[in-house]
Length: 320
Ligand code: HEM
Image (cartoon, rainbow, N blue to C red; front, side, top):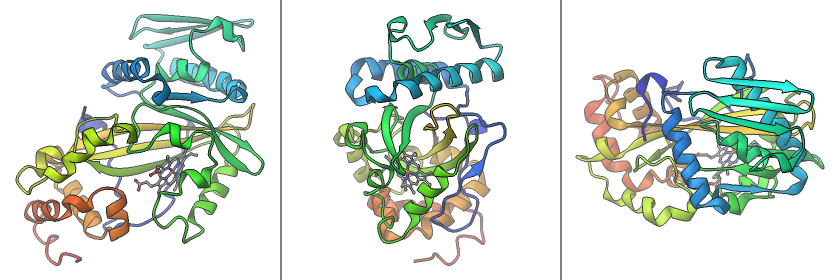
């Protein structure tokens, strides 16, 4: 499922690859974004949650308080910024949320689990395109206390559930050799209540699927071996995750939202400046990162294609 090119958050801002915490502060501090793919993606999410509930949702009971905070935060945000599509009303402890796009009404009593069919985080996630991860802030670190995860890029909620921030990032190259991940954690710890930050993470997939969890790797991972210079334009998709960090004012926990976008190389090629930036970044990608992102399998056919297609003048002098 690809994104309309007008909606696509192109991630590269420089002409060479750099390993940085590229976060920027958001004003207003929004958690979620709606795109034209809303209905299709919500349907896909709901199907996945129904079919693979354990894969797509995990929570500890101690996360419930923060989950209620997230549910109300997301419903208020949707109603405030998208009033044509959503409304949210409060009367005492009773809440009513209307999703006019899906023609659904949700009523619940604040902090009363018997008034909802799903846990609050799972309910919130069924109305937004984002994956939602709740990081509990305690004992000087952040722990993955709950998550609704339908569209992961080769990772598994079951593996990371309950882990602390640093342990979650163990598979990422270089994070153990440097103090990179400690610095990122300190940065998150300093996000003040009500504030939100955003960063873009990118990878490349040889599938149009948004749901590429570790659990189904054998199904989609094998296509990496099928890439040639001739078919790369059709098969390869740039996958961008817009990730937002939001400090919850009441519980002081952190909501991490991930909105995933896909753009085929063929569509990217219609914008020569994008294709050129992509080329420069792939060309300067260190080998360990290229392997981690799965690009190493088809880097040669990809680079051959890019060299032939980027703007004249840029393709000269391939980095290595
Ligand atoms: C608190 C919220 C966050 C959570 C729950 C989270 C979780 C994850 C997970 C599960 C992975 C995949 C690891 C694997 O391969 O198994 C990952 C990758 C990564 N994370 Fe985070 N992350 C968070 C915030 C951040 C932030 C703020 C940064 C800022 C720099 C960051 C940097 C990275 C990087 C560089 C990768 C490798 C991604 C790639 O190259 O494709 N993470 N993260």
